[in-house]
Image (cartoon, rainbow over all chains, first blue to last red; front, top):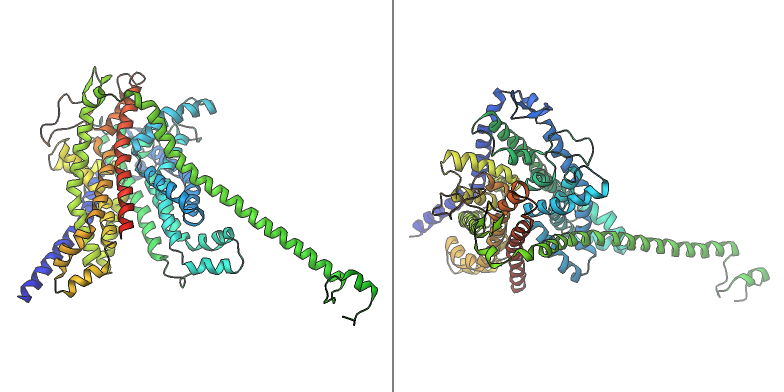
Length: 297
Length: 320
């Protein structure tokens, strides 16, 4: 009887283990199918020609499959949006975790959470019909759909990610550290700037990397507001065509399993590898600098 | 007193201890002065920085209110019963969005039904069965990376795997499966949080009564954690409902004249409808009201569900 119960428990445990492995399975399937549909393009164009070629004319005859302009656009959009979202997100996190009254916190925190829930297509739509005409008038530009607009919209999409993960990191700073600093006569601001912020820096870095990973993979916003010109950007007001928007915009027209189709999957591969790298770095940092009490500082 | 009678000294000394040289006293008082300034400066600094930080928080809050307010202001006029209950007419320049609402409903609930059992089971393994170790570390890494995969890459995966390789075609089923994979990390995360909020005394009491691990989980832990898991599923549905890039190649179409009659039919969906109307519609300027209306319906759905989840979670936390 006990033996039987024991076996049953083991079987159940195995079942849950298999269920938990589904994330790994899905991730494996994603890479498998991405690579099997993307790699054939490299019989047409070399890897370096693909990554560093500056001409993206997939429908021309003969077609050009150089994704450098798309790659540069993705990086430019991500970096520019990070310049906006990092200070905004980290300062909000510090304010909510350390300074705000509980009343202010109770109002603003759910709002930031809701900001994360806004569908990207709605943010893209907002950027298109409100921000774009505004930028066009304010800076006298040929088009308001450009790198700057896309970065601004992306920044507001990555702020909630940065904010909530940073906040967790700030909360996990041991209380003794803060109290010791205050007891030595430091003001609240000095305690935040010289004790709490440095102590939570690894968590905040993780937050920043995850926020940037979200920005580089975001599709609808860049598809709708980045302008769509496959050129290496020369100014922040140039229209650009980041990698995700190329995939989304061209997949419908690409002939099934033609070179263009394979090239778009190869862009997907590049994008996947980018976000994978970002996530692995973030995970590594979170593990390595895990704050365990005050002793590890 | 009485040991120091020098007139020079007595004139400058005010305190009864009276041993301080005038020179020294000047330094002391200026030090006191200086301390007051730095003290003042330090607090001014603090005030200034706190002000900037507060502004950052307010900007974030304002961003949401601006977007929502703007859509409300422009979109509320478009919301009529016809708009909500009719199909698009005259190559989508008139009429309503009923098929899109149905499509979004089918896709997001379908995705939830697919992902919920797997997500809950994963969370049970991670929180109840697995101890710390290599296996769990790898599974967690997989979940985190899955959460970071861009939605357009999910779209490509869905196209290559579900639509083409498994032969489902562009359909509700393929879209729901793709979205299911996309929301799996959300469901796992919230389910684990729900399990964590069940006090360990519940488990200990049950085990002490002689129940097996599985009996404890199925009859004690799961019922206690279920409301929290429900919150997670609401968040999952709302995430799936707002997703565009993942359904572009797998489920959604520009326009279909009839309602889906099976899960292998393609559908129209709210987010894709907004995108199409705003960028490639027949007459982009003329259909603005339709675009605002559709966007308003979508955010009302998504934010409404999120708000319910947030409020419900707050109530649960109060209970524990």
